[in-house]
Image (tube, rainbow, N blue to C red; front, side):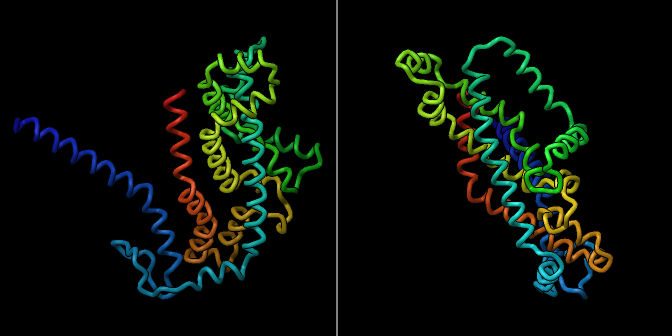
Length: 281
């Protein structure tokens, strides 16, 4: 009995140690950036052990960011891109997921294999072809050009296919026999059952579009059209401000704050969607 209790205590201790290590690795960089952004000019940033409590507390670094770049204009551009990507992903992923999970057609296995293969390629591999396509469409140096490549993601299609596959085929067949069209079946049967997974797709798409830096940097050449992440890069490249990590950290927090607020407000729907997809799929 004592030996069993000792093993339980040891296992519990190891779990807590691992949780603490993971917490430090994942959260400490954010805390470091946050406290750095709140420290004054005369405070040492590189003292050891590092201090996470600002002794010379100030918000002037955030004011410097606001004076240097048009934060609200860039944030508006990022919001347009992110919301557009969310709407397009939810719509097209639902249609594609329904087709893959509930419809029968020739070449279905080939289509699924192609979608899966795209997940194996890093996004940078297709940058040249994407840029040439966007340029040929006349969408270079525009927010439309930023939005188009992210309009539908392979992983989102697979997630929606998993949610659609959980719907009993008998229900869809019965609706078809009663005369329901494909659009009606999607609207009245598939959509109500896939809303949980749609929340997952929406949140992942928003975070990915908001945080994206490389693609908007490639497409956009006019500083007035920059998204927030690209605009914040100016802080690091600015000869005057780039040497001040306090201002750069403040810009990083400004860009990250909307994501934190969004996830905090929608995490209930996100985890509910993951749970439903995991149980039914």
